[in-house]
Image (tube, rainbow, N blue to C red):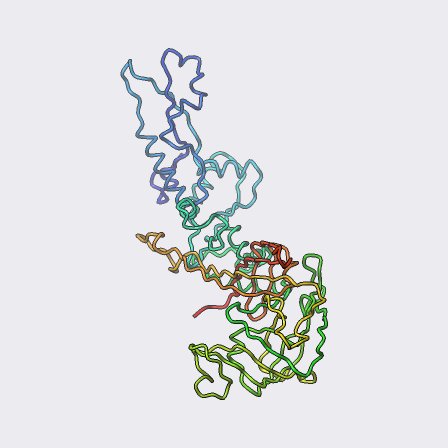
Length: 464
């Protein structure tokens, strides 16, 4: 019996069955074949498939129940007679199936809280074993939507590249953006089953992810491909030599792609990033990473009018419109790297397609195997939306974030051996996931050129 005065509508007016009409012909209705023919079902009313988006599913189910009640048979003898087929609703199935299949604890999101009393009433009325209910709130993130209906809309309208678009809050999407599955599990355990509804910041998840990937990511170098700066070093050996170093200084057992080490090639001429060169000044001592300290002796800059001047000229020094073209420095092999403020990465000339200038000699190694020229395409996708929370009346189309930042750089030749889907760290750039690799060989020079697409992994730091 139902208590018609119950304040809980789910118990006062429960919808336990959905009745769908099955049109049949009177002359053949006796054999019942039409009843079992799926083609004869009324296709205007959906079958009671449970929508995983709970709130939308409940509203849809109630609406369809009303539509079923409004369907009526036509009493005209010439009209097609109607037979009816009953389908149990989600509200009725859950308590029955959970009890019969041995479920001990049913974990349900908080929008079902008003139906908990109905759930228990059905089990008690039918004499079924009771199941303990525990409700929790959905996890909501800022600058995204978790509704699969809305996400499917974005995919269908090609506002994103697919379900694995790095901006998407899908498992495929966040893993493609560099999330370690272990970090996601760790995040969920730390969050617990909270009943409070709040919007989480993505930075919390990515900060945990950084802790997980730090020990797994091999370290490499890269310099911006816009105006790399030639540095001529004095005071060292003229002949190039090799040095083998681990992929990770702190975790030297790390192995990626069957390798645990990388090879550095020391030459009297190296190239550094334009930004590092612009911050340099005569007399400064800085560290070339994994090599030695150097002391800056001379800096040559080129102004906007393409006229080259040396530092000390008031028309060039410190000018934002000038770029550094060359630095001359002296190696300080006994210098203490702990006492230098700046540690910068560098690449040998052949890594950027450069060879010795005439008359310098010993600039690079003529007998060494030709290194691969690695071009890096680094993409920073950012969140899915430009607005923290979509309000009622907002059109999601108006808030899609299409501002994907792309940077190109010249990479360490040791990246040639890194497989796809590997998480790496470009020192002083950040963590990246290897998304795609394209290899080509120039027939004229047998030079190996490798283009690697990298996706920036958020570091979990709040951006101002």
